[in-house]
Length: 467
Image 1 (cartoon, helix red, strand yellow):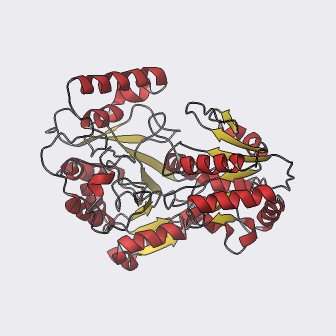
Image 2: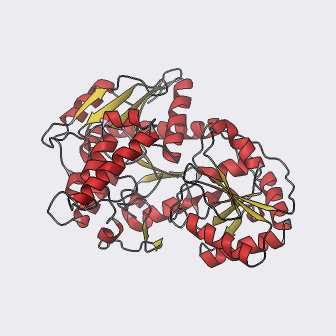
Image 3: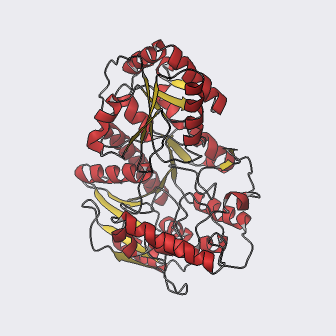
């Protein structure tokens, strides 16, 4: 239990740091760790490291040479593979056991008061078993659906997956990374090369060409055994069983996890939206001209709804809505459609300028996104957001429906909603007005305080159990 004036030891686990890993999870966890350190807590980070070519090597933990953002970082040598969103084919590799001695020694030496896990990717089940053995509370944040879905997005055929028993996972995982790609992305030297994107591209291209020449299938598992998704599911269920408290970042995430893991009702849970230190209350009244400027921030992927948005905008332009611009902020190659305005990725300091350049932010995710920091960023500047009604970020608008522009999640619904907005800009005026009336605390310090309360409750509860 933390006493007044005494710092708390917090150990975070996530699947990597920039430049190899990026995204909302990394941004949130990084900012949370930095802020916790500033408030006086002792903060540490654990990361999955290299996969040895010799699979017989023992799992070890060593101190990273360089701290991460001033935070002492430790690396697991010979962790489990990190699947990201490409899925899993070699299920045995992702459930490979270790004896747990390295985790036991590490936890005994560090003696954290709390462990905060942001994903199960790369993490052995034995780590959680040792944390339970030492009575250390484990917090799990639901950034995505990894653990209840091997691709982390819980989609099948473009829709929400309803396969509770993981019988159809092989079809969704057919593009899973082969072993050479997993080994490369977790190698220490790969992070240094990521700063030279062209070199990385040439390496990947060369290996892929070589694979085609030799007739090997890069998506095929190296092991001959048939993937056993039932055992993989049981493995992750056993990990969820060792979590002390679930931090769901939306009511959507909580509902999805409960639908897959009904026994979570026996666990403590908290619904708290995520944020980051770059978000503050910058809301202002906005005006709208004759051109409808739609913004899209993110990857060009099916599950993010990018191609559905392109289809909807193309339909609008072809049906006479010519005064429309789609502003794409991405590091991906340029689009050539007449209505597209291409922009490179932007630095956090440029966020205000980006928000001032658009009238509406479209986030048409096809998957049940657990939250979506881009939505909160837009709302913090008073920019209306177009979301499917099942998006986790829809929680922002609870209590003020006028502030949100929600549609049913279908391509047709997206087309119709954009057409209504194009024909009637008063809808944007009303949404902006509703955003200005939202009772929402945008400060990241508020989120950090709420997280500290979760930690306090768990450490106190474990202290009582121990006694």
